Length: 347
Ligand SMILES: NC(=O)C1=CN([C@@H]2O[C@H](COP(=O)(O)OP(=O)(O)OC[C@H]3O[C@@H](n4cnc5c(N)ncnc54)[C@H](OP(=O)(O)O)[C@@H]3O)[C@@H](O)[C@H]2O)C=CC1
Ligand SMILES: CC(=O)N[C@@H](CCC(=O)OP(=O)(O)O)C(=O)O
Image 1: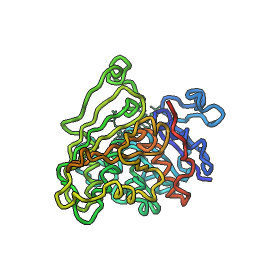
Image 2 (image 1 turned 90 degrees about the vertical axis):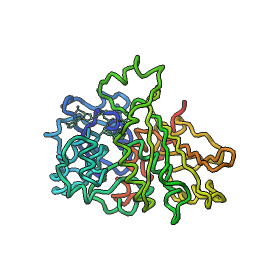
Image 3 (image 1 turned 135 degrees about the vertical axis):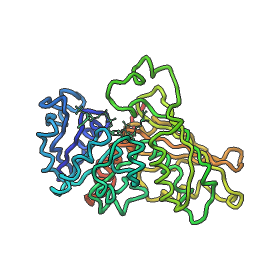
């Protein structure tokens, strides 16, 4: 059994990790932290876990994280990098759901996250946890920086177009128009996610610059090996879970005869958690709710030179906790799908 610790068990991604890992056949939940709820049984805070999780929260200083095989950090940015050196020294693998190990350029990290990076050597060895792109490197990793929720949809949505030897699309005019439910902002109390602010409302934010832009550009350039430029506009929609990203790419004249549907189907042939839907589909966020599946539909309106790629995921699962469990499975030599084959919840 894999002994698992979770730092930050009271947040939305933390409790999602608990839900997934409580049912994982190869996992023994060993330590779950909360600074505020030290001693409280997990099931008292989350009755949905009664009968599934018998542990209590403990404060991070008391939790026996060094005795785990792997520790997930479902915490704000900056927490994992402070504790990773000691855990790695004790032979514990680290999977960070925050951004401490995503951006390879330390200066870029410091600019976008407004804090110094305390362990650049660990950042250098960390592997970006996007299995469909980085599966081989994840197998050998000690430290994983999991992608942000929006970057997962943008990278998996554009990847088949960019992974070809020669450009098929204009790679410097990519556009991503993305919408997220409010759980993307976390469980902490904040005015923009109050019911009276977020419901019956719809707005863009972060147009001037969002921290997921440099992360996505880094990923897309690694896939293509060429310079990529992207306009990314996130929006907050009045729903709880889910991201819907609409991606736009202009087809180059020499690639107009490409069968893009076939290209996507081939690229994701072996990927159990990416579903390329039949041509003409309109994926819905509720078709992936509470599951690790990401669905893609490829459109070419009126057969012209514009590609429109629709991508949906559950931000808390494929966008965070589920992707983390997928990486853990790969790191520990398990089948990638172990404990993750949930049927999405309707309605
Ligand atoms: N929500 C989403 O859709 C996604 C979130 N992420 C990232 O995952 C991380 C967690 O997000 P989310 O679950 O939404 O956040 P929440 O705000 O819901 O939860 C944060 C958790 O971290 C704990 N925590 C806060 N500060 C510290 C600290 N200094 N040391 C130890 N524990 C701390 C909190 O518990 P307590 O205060 O009791 O200790 C709480 O359990 C964030 O970095 C987020 O950016 C990534 C992808 C998607
Ligand atoms: C709706 C909403 O507020 N979403 C968050 C992104 C959540 C996420 O994945 O972000 P991290 O990079 O922090 O891990 C935002 O735009 O800041």
